[in-house]
Amino acid sequence: MKTLKERILKDGRVLDGNILKVDSFINHQVDYKLMDDIGEEIYSRFADCKVDKILTIETSGIPVAYSVARNFDVPFVFAKKTISGNLAGDLYKTKVFSYTKSCQYDVVVSKKYLLKDENVLVVDDFLANGQAALGMIALVEQAGAKVVGVVALIEKAFQDGGKLVKEKGYRFEALASIEKMDYEGIKIKE
Amino acid sequence: MKTLKERILKDGRVLDGNILKVDSFINHQVDYKLMDDIGEEIYSRFADCKVDKILTIETSGIPVAYSVARNFDVPFVFAKKTISGNLAGDLYKTKVFSYTKSCQYDVVVSKKYLLKDENVLVVDDFLANGQAALGMIALVEQAGAKVVGVVALIEKAFQDGGKLVKEKGYRFEALASIEKMDYEGIKIKE
Image (cartoon, chains in turn orange, purple):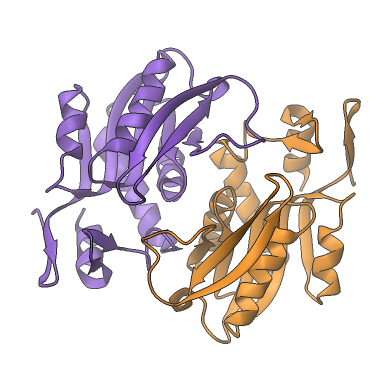
């Protein structure tokens, strides 16, 4: 996606530990116009698919899911990262390891909001080692629903996540694939 | 807001501990159309005000902030609940006590995304005791920015939050004010 790639090159910053900061327009401050365009782009890539629901994981995936849901005219669901007191009842649950935060956490979705045979498009802001995406896939599979595909706005293509999702037999799309990033700059696939 | 009130009466559920569950349409599964309408409603109430930025707090406030930001044609920012490894640099920071989770947590915003003299509209899904809203107000005040107002989709009007926000001299709006809720039902102000 050309506008996203240009924006990453313009405003993204590379920090120690393989961190690409896009917090001025994606995941702390959000440029709603770019997010609107992102929803349209993702819709255009899956317009030929039946999609009943958009699934993401809190927190930064939520604007993405909202924008995509509007384009498909379907609800979106955000999986939660811990079991809060407010999340009573039957849950689908899986464990996800976060390399960014060096900890494992539970990801849960209420059984009411992922239904058997639903066609679910999984979206998130980043995909690096793919742990969050694989966790969401596990939740959809537990529900007996179908993963239509997995979309990340930004893939760290030098890590394994995209490969792991595809090895599970699922379609994976990234709007911007980072081939390389360091203090010299950011290189994005054409 | 009539459609929100009707939806709460239809799909909201009251649980032990003063919990109003609206997770089928607001804060776990999200009805994007209702959220679009909510953005328009909030815009209409503040259309005569200068608004430069929308501020919310992760997680459930994010769809609200996105929808409102689109209507005002401004960016939105979501304050973060802990200091993650990804949030480097100078932060505005305050402490918020969550009665729901019985714990205190830090709320932070990067100093880059709340600027002096900006006009900031604070939005969230719920307001009960008002601690999250007061935390966001504190962040805006630290930045030397101006709170245009505070909006909650759902106010628990039998708790003190709305009063506390108004006592600080700020405009407070709720799209639905719950007067009373128990196993007999939910009563919303006309």
